[in-house]
Image 1 (cartoon, rainbow, N blue to C red):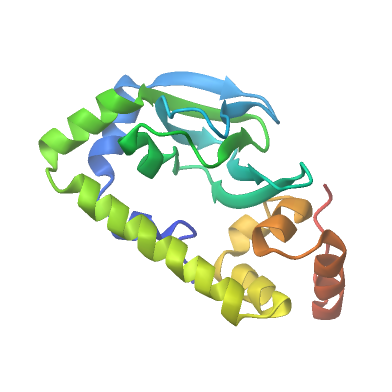
Image 2 (cartoon, one colour):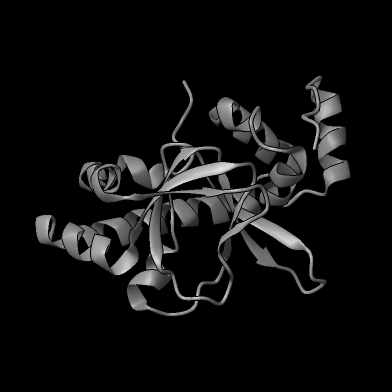
Length: 192
């Protein structure tokens, strides 16, 4: 059975936020490559992805993009921790394909959430930390082939949806190395 990619979702009750976005959120469409948030900006929105998907990216020293996270349909795309602190985002949010979201102003959504769930900030921050720490440990512990196999076993729907270049960047594997791993595993290539 596939796991939740953004595992914080299993630790945080997001029902109230989902209902708030669905009831009051403004529908916005981002075309492929459009930014929901640029690295260095302050988060202004909480966005519920209704269709498509977004990637979280950071710029490398050579100016290329590193994929550091994904927000799939039914998930939220937001810089939660830095948004709460009102400090610049460490990662950009980019529509990987044409993506429809329901957006709420960040501060408004947070205030509404904390009224109904006073411990929300603590619970959400803890869940995000656990997810990120697990991903960090995988980078140290697993070989590139093991990271790939773990990803496709745990998230087959995502692996078949996202571009190979995005997956390679997320897994910290060169695109060419990932293609070799896929070939040795007998897996097909998703075109980019």
